[in-house]
Amino acid sequence: MQRYLGEEMYEDYQEGLMSRREMLRRVLGICGGAAAAAALLAACGDSTSATATSVPGNTAPSTAAPAPTAASAPTAAAEPGAAAPTTAAGATTAPVATAQASSGGAPLSVAADDPAVTGSDVTFQSATTVNAYLARPSAEGSYPGVVVIHENRGLTDHIRDVARRLAKAGYIAVAPDLASRAGGTAQVGGQVQAYFANAKPEELVADLNAAVDFLSKQPGIAAGKYGVVGFCFGGAYTLRLAAANPNMAAAVCYYGVTPDPASQMSATNAAILGQYGGNDQRVNSTIPALEEVMQSGGKTYKKNIYDGANHAFNNDTGQNYNEAAAVAAWKATLDWFGQYLKA
Image (tube, rainbow, N blue to C red):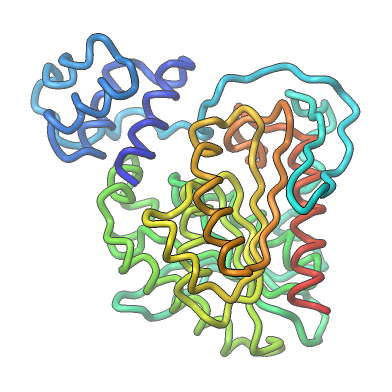
């Protein structure tokens, strides 16, 4: 996770989303020291990586500048007129997606005051008090539960919006703040990526398991089967939760790296859908390890790779937002949950 998040900071710097000085601050914080930061930058092909030691007095990322809102694989133009992804020969086909959002804004967004959903900030107990956002349909009924796992920026308004999208589609969704052990996303601020890079995976998975327990106690929950969806950092932890919790029936991983070792995925009971940007080679290079474990274990797995889309293509508040890919991927997400949680 340190290497993954450090590489993401370096890509943000290459794309001009932050200054070199700010990138060095953040990489130092993520890696925990100058030697590790220099080694990571050298692995990224940075010919002046030794300057990682020249930022005076910095052992953690600066909070002076806001964290960037999107990861930064290069933006590439592609043909318009994307179609929804399909599956061929048991694996993958990909839509051709436009690289820009349309002038109409974000078509998937669900407003906080939408009468069809009820959303609120909540807390639940793990080894600590976990902050979270809970969204549910306003109408009474019985609904499956889904955990929503945020990007490495923490619990943001965008992730709250994703929870509301699920609520409007007929799910009770909870989005935990995985920075809660450090006081929460708002308190951690600009050091949030460094926090996640150095957090203990078993503690974060424990907090996610507590989120499933919290869901199980909600009025109107259709108990017994739960889903999880996550993005970037949250995509990686979607896979970890799917492996760790036997009650997870469906998981949708948006551009998350495969956990190391991949063999842990052999324990999953979940049907897993991977959603990836065609330009996101850093993440996509980890797909074969996941495929091998899922296929050898007879697990349910499918991937969709969206041509022309970059890392973080679903985040409609970020520079890599790709409307066509996001809409197609969301349809695939709801179809997946409909098949494995509602059927």
